[in-house]
Length: 381
Image 1: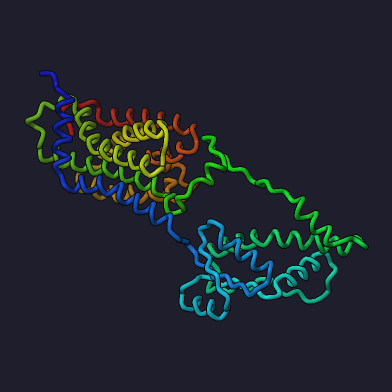
Image 2: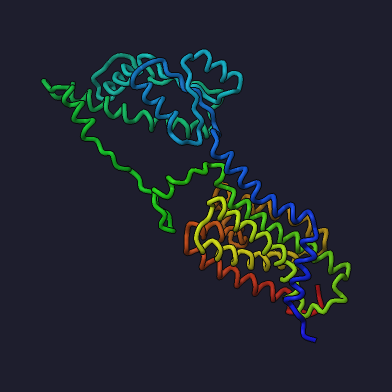
């Protein structure tokens, strides 16, 4: 009798959706993402810095620039250094930056010193106090220098005019400097997919949303690995001995795809609803991802000797993929591991269209490996 695979697929889906836990997981996906989206749009930062403005014009300008600029560093304005240091000692801020009253004079003295025209002892323009010197605080100081650069540049120009050109009208020179400076962008962002700096600047989701896509892809793969574990358990219990399952390879992938398609559809709809994706390319990547995950999970099942070893391998695999795939960071040193993982190709293809071709090749290779391991058997688990 010819196997009705469509009917089998329907029955497997019906069996899966009777499990309350699976329904809860699918419903949690959009709730979690929308929640993170709301949190990311609120005031948040990975480092809190107290900016103390003691009243200098240029120091106030720099402090205002830091406070208004969108950044992963969260700046708070203080007028009292002592209060800021108390908050530092109380672990309420991570660093204190003080712009003293004579900030403008200190900057001028510094730039004169660069020209060799000022032999007086240089006094630091900004006083920085930290509990410890971390990588994040070093990056924050780079942002501080970027904000100070405009004032430094003008001070150096102004001192050059005053010291090197006798009889020059400094007010006229200052007016020329301010009216003649460029208002264009020094850098222009562009990725492999052709998105410009305007598209990048238009992303208001914040850094908290950056790893969400990778985490949700791992969740889809986890659905497939869990289905592979349940399939192994059903085979061991001989649940399907009475069913005309036909070709075992096809039946196994129908079993895995019930969970993968449901998880992939929920994640894809969430991508579109939250603005993490747009266009038909995302649907194509998700389709390839689901197929590759089905074969990947089948290969993992076949390579593990039993149910306990498969259950043990799943959390290990998830941790390895979380570290190796570019969810949070891209570690080139783990390239060999990355090439064996479906989420790696999806995330890379998101910005580089070439990886969509690599993704398709990877999927074909994974199907071939899975077929070879299964030997096309109609009966063996």
